[in-house]
Every structure is written in C-alpha cells, then in structure tokens.
Image (cartoon, rainbow, N blue to C red; front, top):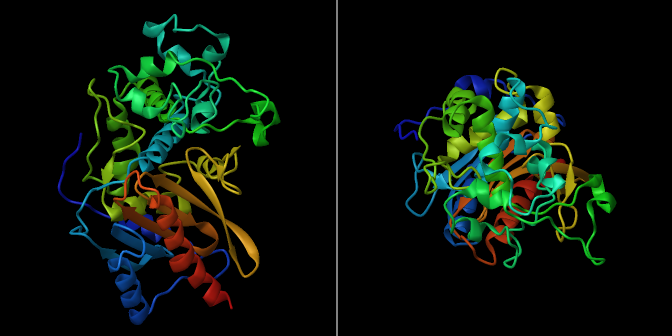
Amino acid sequence: MSMIKSVVLTPVLFALSLAPALGQSLTLSDDEAAALTARIEDDTYGSVTSVLILSDGQPVYENYFAGADADTLHDTRSVTKTVTSMAVGAAIADGRLSLDTPVARYFPELMPFDRPDARKLAITVEDLLTMSSPLECNDWNEFSRGNEERMYLVEDWSEFFWDLPVRGFPSWQTPPADSPYGRAFSYCTAGVQLLGEVVGRATGEAFTDYAERRILTPLGIEDLAWAMNGQGQAHMGGGLRLSARSLGALGELYRTGSPDLLPDSWIAASLDHHASIPDTPGWEYGYLWWLMPYEVAGETYWSAAMTGNGGNRVMILPDFGVTLVFTNTDYNTRQMHQNAQAFFETEVVARLQESAD
C-alpha cells in the first residue's frame, strides 16, 4: 500500500489531449466560476468536497470544499471498480488474460465450489467486466445472497463469490438471451473483487503492485491509499482514496488515450455498449464504465463515468474534450446520485448547450 505524500500530474498525459471532435470547448468566466462556487457552498449539490473540470486537458474550474484541498485523498467508493477494469486491460495487453478467459481456473483451492454448476466454470473475464455473470449477486437488492454487505461479514471474499447460487429468471424478469447485448446486468461488487483477484493471480503480482506499476505510477499518481479486507487484500471494488487531480488523470487517460499504458482498442472496447442498465432508462454499461446519454443542440451524445456511493463521479465527454471530477460524501443517501447528475446537467451540459446556441 503506497502512502507517498506528493501528487504529480504527469505533464505528458495532458499534452496528449486532443481538440474536441466538435471544436467546442467548455469555458467559465471569473464571474461564472464565483457563482458556481457559491452554489456549491449553499449545498445545492449536497456535501461536495471537490470539483475539477478539465477542458482539452486544461483546468477551467478547480475548487475544494468542506476542509478538503488539492492533497486530500477522497474515498470515492465504487469509482475503484473502473480502476480494476484498467488493470484488467493492462493484463490483457500484457498477454496474461483475455476477455474469454474462464476465471474459475484461478481458484483450484476452492474447488469443488459450493452448489457445483457447469455455468460457474464458464464465467469469463468479460462476464465480470459487464456485471453479467450467472450468479445471484445484486447489491441493489438487500435480499440478494450476493449483496456486498454480506460479503463484508465473511473473511474470504473469493469463496463468498463462488459459494453463490446461480440466478433464476422468473417470467417477470428478462433472461440474458432476451436482454440487450445478450447480457442481464446485475450490479455485483463481489464479482469485481474476484476480477481483481484474477488479475493478481494471472500476473503473479499483488493486484495493488500491478495496478500501481502499470497504470497509476506512470500517470504520476503516487499518493493513494487502498482499503484492505481482513485477509490483507485490497478492496478492488471500492475504497481506493485518490486526490481530485489523480482522478482527473484517470479520466484523461480514457478521454485522450495513451498507447504506452493501454491499447486504444482496449479503451474503445471499454467505452462501448455491452449491457443495458435495468430500471435506469437510457443508461448502459461498458467494461466497468457507466455510459450516460446527454443532449446538446438537439443531438444525443454519450458520456462515460466512473461512479461511486456518495455521488462521486469521474466523467469524460470525448465529443467535447471535457473531463469532470465531482467528489461528495453523501454516502447512502437518497439524493446522492441525483445531486451528481444535477451538477453534470446544470454546470456542464447546460454550458455546452449555451455555447452551441
């Protein structure tokens, strides 16, 4: 676990920034920035701790609240899941994994699994990247056997995943074969945790060491703190603490690309549409990236987001050259994601709309 004090934004990364495809940049005047600060301080968007808006790789707004500053490490919860996806991409680029790799092969010490089923043995890396494994695991359902709160009560999180039963699809639910993209999405932290463990076993390095060596350190991200479980493993589905600028660097990696770190083909695949989100009209899912539509000048575009409990987000808008970091501590509250969405629509999309008019 790294606890080095300095945060360095690698200049080379931001030098890679490309002009927006539509030739339209996001700007804020001094008066607009002051008004935005006042709205945040009035709790318009909940308990905000930082906001960083980059346009073409350059900061157009950066501010900190509730005692935070540029060095503060923010607990952005499930934003960590997308970092796990990045490590998977690196492992695939390094020839250690593939999308169709069956992941059960990495856990021989747990075999035979509880509730043996051939479908468990067929679960692939891509199934876990798209939250569409056949196991009964749903963090959005408090009654689910795979709900993450139940995982936190046991010592061995990998065993927890493999002990889960196979999901059922009664007539009022849509089975994978009839779902968009042939996948039935179910939000499962346990599956992402297992995926990170697969990365470690496939590469022969601790997940934290591999993710830092291949992704974080090359981006200049050296000040960080991993959340750890009772077995000393990193929580690869949540809890990684990073500064707002470091979060911005991760977003920029996927907005601009950096072939030395991840192939362009991996970034494109990660931001492609692989599953539809139930009960969230219009939203879809990539490889542990949320895909959210928005409209400017009557045209629909797609943003890609790393999201986490509390209303935390890192969002990229490739068509307009924008990366947004929004950190918030309204954990487990009714309005947390609504506040984040309101900020995105009011302070980012509406500004793009104004400049298009």
